[in-house]
Length: 283
Image 1 (cartoon, one colour):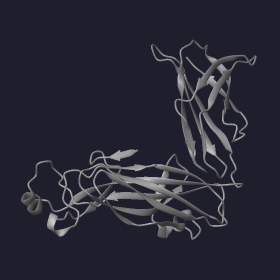
Image 2 (tube, rainbow, N blue to C red):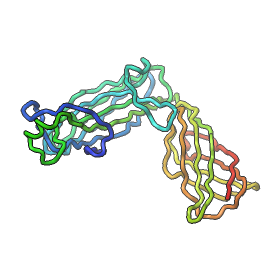
Image 3 (cartoon, rainbow, N blue to C red):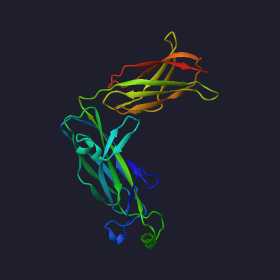
């Protein structure tokens, strides 16, 4: 479950606050809420409909109102997905084909609701396609604990409401190609108490998202393994994107010189061949 309080905000939306008698939803000091899942990984078939749901949880004692809105999401070549207005996207973009059970829901206190989501996947889509949702709490709230109702009405002209973004990943069966090229390998030699480290840059050349925990091996001139490094964390590479991956340090002495760096994947589903590049280890 993903929860959000006013600080920090994942997304900010401005809304005019309402007095208690102007709304069916009473003013409350907190607009914290939760969603699940924050990321949807769906197996899709081009030309068919996929249905799923998002759980919106209201942990507060009072009822709360929420807006659920579809947004455009796309990979643009960098390490992150980017949100765009749906109107600016092509007619066959996945985000244009998302429909919701309801765009406005009211959830009682200490309760939750599963909001159904439907995707009519266009027949021409391939690889990994993206869309998104924003769930925002539109309930009127006090921005400061202890602020009296009359002070709120007079002094607070504009309120900030929290919102949580959700990423929808649609993996089109039978159309995914997993490819990448090794753009750069950097070895950072040990200095003082700082151990040897490494960083690589990978460029996705396929049409599908790759999630993996790669390994980097250093070989000397006789192809003997002198170091084996594991990525610091599981990496996600979006289609067409460039991704930098840092590796865990090696607490051993490696002599300066030129080595062969071999990057390999431990994910059999992608069937990715090892990639190699010559690299210099300095002093």
